[in-house]
Every structure is written in structure tokens, then in C-alpha cells.
Length: 203
Image 1 (cartoon, rainbow, N blue to C red):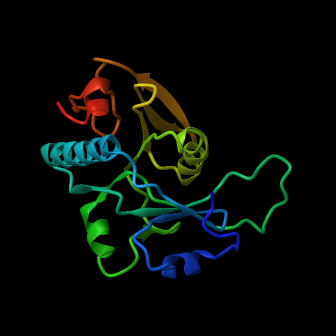
Image 2: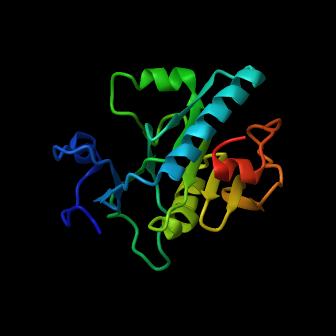
């Protein structure tokens, strides 16, 4: 269900306030309310945020992981046969974003949305819920690939699977991990986490 039938621009989206605490993604110019998610959803996101911060420190990388805090302005692949032009804006809020600390600090005095002409996130994560399965596996996978975000994690507690998508020539190659299989990440090659641990949100 969309929050409004009226199409709005990206600039209007940045200023939008309906007086509630609801967060919205912008999809083809329409406001889409984001559900609060289950405790498990939040637990997985927090666990990955901490894990990525720890791993960044071990690697000596000045990166920060942020959950539910950073928007990413997206481009969408045109549908087959669709006319060029006239496309409306899309902006996503991933469950976890890894980005340079300097970039995060630069967002402190403005809307925390990474624009199309700015440095891309290093890694994004979406935790799947019943209402977001199609979006996480299809729409967002396509949108993040168009942006050329190097790595995209789809953490799916419903199917008990963690899919790591790595960008290769403009498209994602995906590898699925289950149970006690160790996650293999291009961004964090020394990360010592199993799919089971990620899905449980704890070691």
C-alpha cells in the first residue's frame, strides 16, 4: 500500500514530513512506508552493524556501518519497451550501509541521503521480511547493481539463507550460504561468520 497517490519529486521527498515517525522510501515518485520490522529483523541489522565496524577496524579501514540511517538515491533499469525519459525518482533506505567515515560525517548537517553524483556505499544489506521479499530479491538487487554498489547482502530469515551479491561487469553474481557455511565477502575477506550466526544475530 502506498502512502499517497500523488507523485512527488526527490526534492519534495527530502522535505516531506507527515508529523509521524514513519520512514518512507521513494519508489517511482511514490512514498512507500517502511514497516518497523520484527525484533529479529532489528537484531540482525544491529549485529551486522557491529560486526562490520569491528572488521573495518581490524582491516585499518576508516569505514562505518550504519543501520536504518542512510538513504541511497537509485536509478532503475527501464522496463522492456518502456519509453525513455519521464521516470520518477527512487530512494531506498537499506537496513545496513557501510560507507567511509568521512562521508558519514559529511551527512551530519544535511539529509542523510547519498546522491547519484556522490561516493557510493561500499556495501548494503537488506533483511528480508514477508512484505519485502520481492523488492529485496528483485527491485533492490537491480537498482543497487545499476548504481554499481560493490556488494549487496540479502539476509533472509524466512528461507534461512544469506545471499551475497558481488558486482561483476554491472550485474551481481550471487552466492547463497546456509547453516554453518562461512560467509565469503569480497569487502570483508577475513570475516568469520556463518550464515547461521548472521541469521541468529549473534555468535
